[in-house]
Image (cartoon, rainbow, N blue to C red; front, side, top):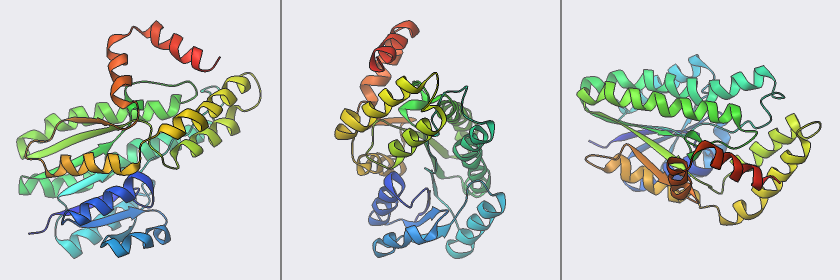
Length: 271
């Protein structure tokens, strides 16, 4: 029987690349996104469009029910939907902070709740949570984003042990710098929240850095999609895959260096 995969946040970037790659690998793939019109480009690659808003419980329930009605099962869930809301913790309005956590954490968790029962009963399945190297390290003005990704890392570790007796794997993907819309959105929100006032100089320095060397050297989304394909086709996948520009050296530095050293490096970057 063909394996069925649901990929959230499939309208662009990592999600679109993953949906295409899994479809080429023989999966029946549902590419999910809030804006279905942006999924039309995937139809030629055999990806089925799925309307999904991870901030709406009704939308998530309807989407999962549709897949189960049409395909009969969900073998792989790739939780990729998410974004980066940047700005000084002091400046970001609380409703925007709550939306950041709602999309990046609670939407992901609710999708897991909806697909796990079927996986558990069958005794097989793979849940892939796309976090970031930002789930292990932080950058200034990304406090709310990092809070959401650190939380997904912790949730994934607990979930992995809970589901292991039922044959369900939980994998964390930790991308580094990837050439997607993410950076532009993050810097636009940073400038909107903190582009004036006490943090303005450092926010603009960070935006310049993100648009310079980081953008030039960022990896393509398919680098991450290949790692996800390896994870969902492996008999025993690794618990974590750090992939893309600067992911592995940055996470190694985080393990080795003390907090003050990491603080100093980030301060120098914004000087």
